[in-house]
Length: 345
Ligand SMILES: Nc1ncnc2c1ncn2[C@@H]1O[C@H](COP(=O)(O)OP(=O)(O)OP(=O)(O)O)[C@@H](O)[C@H]1O
Ligand SMILES: [Mg+2]
Image (cartoon, rainbow, N blue to C red; front, top):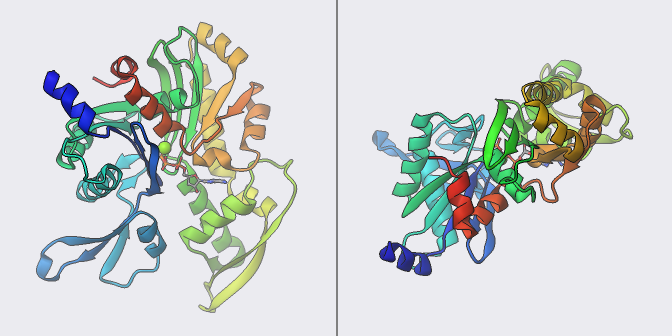
């Protein structure tokens, strides 16, 4: 106990949002210290001696879709769950070392945000990855819980709060009351599925193949969820599927909206289904307090407008949807009694 307290003085405890698209790290006393894509570039070593990590984060993301045969840019977290443990551990180690600066001797206490649907096997794997990456103690918090705390909702009160987190890999919808998740639903649809939908649409409509990064840029620049949005256009570059040569077309926001119909519908439906499963007292609270949107995907233009039309409920967007989860986990790190209350057993 005493040793633990002493270790606490010398280490910078960390909160980590290990996302499909981005990993964010909060350091106690310092705030957000790192925000990078969850991408690792590895090189196959000769004679099957395993893989060597070349780059992590921004540098590795630049390599996505542009690597020669021997190098691979990997996104180790798919659909919100860890798909490649070794690479995830390498990534965690890199982020922990960077945040921790290696100047302190003590090992940090680490809070990691995990999807609400995580299995016990996955939980153990995340814990072990963090321990072997240098943690002294590991706490797991469910992402919607952290998001709600980060968005400034009082999660310990006996009132219903609905949080919708639209990330890269998943969309999590949860109703929280009295420090616990009352009902939740997750779907493996988020920003990535939107990018995929744009790639497929461009293939069908223009016979053109575009890359993941281009599709994401199109989505962020002119994408919209609603027919009420003002129409804008954008030039996109790709490869003609018939002629096989590079080509440029001009696409409109209306076309992108059409491309996004399916993933957007899946998200709206998940909100509806969760509302249906919500106990009446809590549903009444949500009518008054509204639904809080977090996650990068919630930045899609007029998605809040569409949800307002579809649910007839007040829709709020957290101030910084990208960092709500990590800031919530950080706040729990600063308040140990809250942490013990909301952390998973
Ligand atoms: N302006 C924008 N419009 C639409 N989508 C956006 C915008 N900005 C970011 N995104 C999308 O947000 C997603 C990343 O969000 P976020 O960082 O919350 O995901 P994550 O936490 O890494 O994923 P997950 O929670 O599923 O594990 C990406 O798919 C990105 O393309
Ligand atoms: Mg997330």
